[in-house]
Image 1 (tube, rainbow, N blue to C red):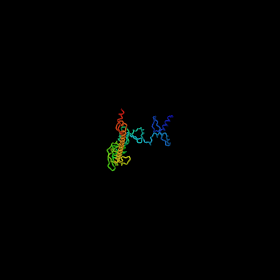
Image 2 (image 1 turned 180 degrees about the vertical axis):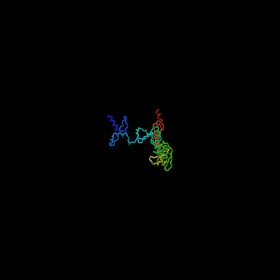
Image 3 (image 1 turned 90 degrees about the vertical axis):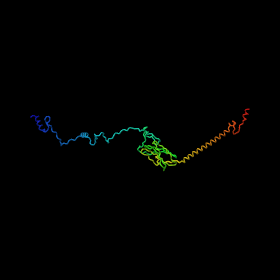
Image 4 (image 1 turned 90 degrees about the horizontal axis):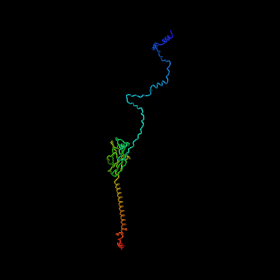
Length: 287
C-alpha cells in the first residue's frame, strides 16, 4: 500500500462517523465543548463601556407619548422669558375733584387719551364727599365740597336745625361742587351734609365733628348784628352830609363878602357897602 492510501485509512479511522459530510465527501469536525476546568478570561473595560453606552440608563424617565392627543403639555417645563417692551404711559387727565362744574373724567380721557384717577365702579355705593367750606349768613348758606373717588350720579344737600326736622335740597348734577341754601333762621345751629348717590345707594353721613367729613355744624348770625351795621352806616353818612353842608355854607358866605367890597362895584357906580358914587366927577372933567 502506498503512503497516501495509508494516510486516508488512518484519517477515516480517527474521525467520528456521526458528522455530516462535506462537499467533497469528508465529515466536518465536531465543535469543541466549553472547558470548565480553565476559567474564562475577564472582559476588558472598553467592552463594558461600550455595552453601557448602548443600553439606555434605567434611572432616567423617558417622555411619555400620547398618540391620541393633539398637544402635549408638561407642567414641569419652564417657558423661556419674554423680553419686556418699554411702554410709555399716557399723561394724567386735567381732572379736579373740587372744581365746580367739572367735566367727567371719562369724557376727558376719550378726547385726549389721558389717564383718569382710580374710582370704584357703578355697582359699589359711593364714598362720602369731603365738605370744604361753608359761608353762612343770617338767612342762607353756601357750601363747597370735593367729589369722592367713586361713581356718582347726583348730589343732594341735607340740613336741619339741631333738634328739628331734616330738610332735603333738590338733586344736583354730578358735575356740581357748590350749592346755596336759603330760608334759614337767624341765630340757629344747623347741621349741613352733602350726600352722593348712584344706582346702588347713597354715601354715609356723620355727626359733623369730623374735620374732613361730609357734614358740618355751623351757627347762623343774629339779626341784631346786621341792624348794628346798618345803624353805624347811616350815622356815618349823616355826619358826612352835615359836614359837607356846613363847609358849603361858609365858603359861599365868604365869597359874597369879598364881592360887595371890590373895586369893580365902586367904578360901575352901583350902590355898595361904602355908599353911592359921585356923579358930578365925570361931568366936571369934561368941562
